Length: 371
Ligand SMILES: *Cc1c(COP(=O)(O)O)cnc(C)c1O
Image (spheres, rainbow, N blue to C red):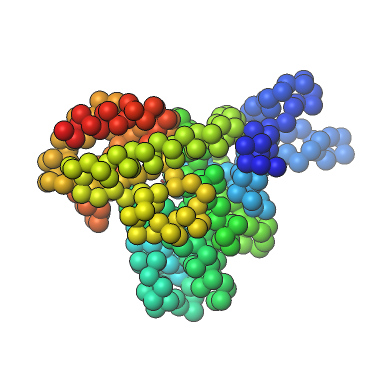
């Protein structure tokens, strides 16, 4: 089946007992035993599994072309389950611009338990120089946040496979509509489903999707069911509902982002636009090779000082100043403020999550704010 069809049908089934076309929300935390102590189906207790979570995991698995999925209560919970699944002493290589929430998780919660290096992962020589006998995982994030760097997934996979190292990819910015890391050879995909999957800035969630249902996956699964970082049945229901429109929404985000990137790129007040869909992007060729679409987030660097950057962002009327991305409404953010004092993000960089408003209105808002 094609993506649009999967998005609508793989997370839903007509209810056997009532005929409801949309799968109902099952809030019960526990499931009745039959006289012989067995259960009617696969459900026992909702921390382990729940029908709405199963439905969500089914559609996630199929969208990413994987073997199994686990839905979490947030993207960070999904990332943490991966780190908790590794044997103490395992060495992780991650990008130096890894999503700051997960970078801080490693630095603050896993120091002394795991080893990690944050490096320029796109430089093969640097990457090879950091490989150690205990390297167990290469973590990639592409396109990256907030610099929109593009990592060549196949290249990383080939280096990792030679040495039996696992590759996990944070695919939040791309979504499976724009990029399918498992198809490119990655072992695991991670998502903050808070972003495009939820798509309306009103749901938190995370996901892991595995290429193979192997021993590592079973450990990750145990971390989740024993740790309990699960989404509620109601959240799962709304996530499944949102995913039905994911392919169409993402296409709209990509369309608007490309046009806005081109507008900003041509504007005299703008120093540089970071968007993989622009031919001037340093990894445009790799992006064209591995991506189906270039995503809905772009960053741009303004000319002038920090004060000017804040002046521009505060002059915008339609575009809301807030963190996060992937919602139908456009959001803009001064990323260095969000990331705090140890950030390497330029002070004059603004990140936009390009929404689904009409592109003419978005451009008009930037036109008045930049002039
Ligand atoms: C938001 C985000 C996360 C963390 O997800 P939460 O749902 O906020 O916990 C991880 N990676 C990327 C790229 C993100 O944008």
